[in-house]
Image 1 (tube, rainbow, N blue to C red):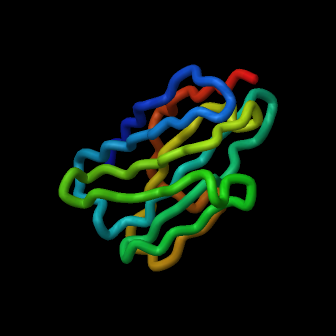
Image 2: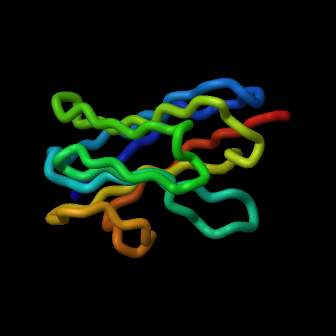
Image 3: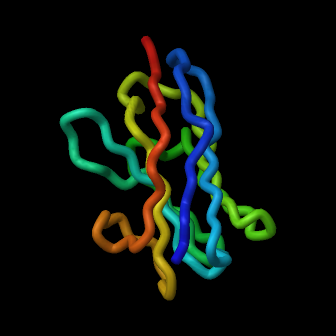
Length: 124
């Protein structure tokens, strides 16, 4: 089993930056596909960014150019650097993982492991 714990969320103003962290434990996730999702009140959970075991990255159109996903295999941690934050980025952000996969997918159901989420609130 893999446990994922997100951190780094908070309340910021529009235009600010935040870096979210997802620390994995239980297993080494260097060979896992890792993803970040978010869920705003009253909306479905949506894909934000993903990174493959080889370092390939994929982003939702809404965050391209503003968010960067990365991984530090030595720390068993994945990051989401967010800049130029907008009020519409307000959501609970979740980290997710899938083992034995080559490519990143955007479907929620495809991921086997999930963290508890961290709140990001962007005020205008």
